[in-house]
Length: 118
Image (cartoon, rainbow, N blue to C red; front, top):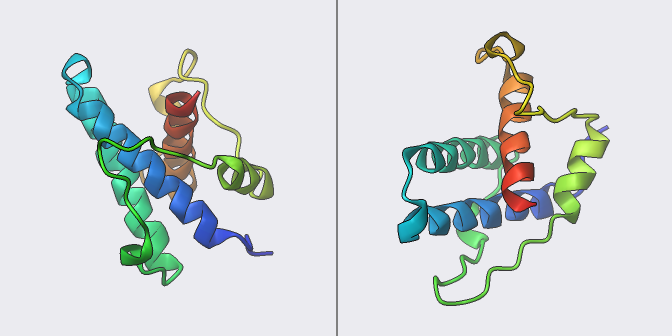
């Protein structure tokens, strides 16, 4: 069964992407790892939009000086609906993820989103 709140889920991923991009602009967080994570989230967002024929121009980005509101309910519902088990980054091994497996890549991205939003 398809996830019936895909538009809300895509919006949540977009808002998280904006949050991470804003974090990379902060002078205290200008590290390359965070920039790469933002790129991975961006690529995931583009794939979601393409696979679900969603027009990303319909999403509202929050200006840098406005408070960002992220509704994580669709994120957690999506994870529960698809029975996705997030990675524990303190225990992950290189062999735990196959970069050629879309499910592993999605799990990796969602794990980063979870840790960044907590």
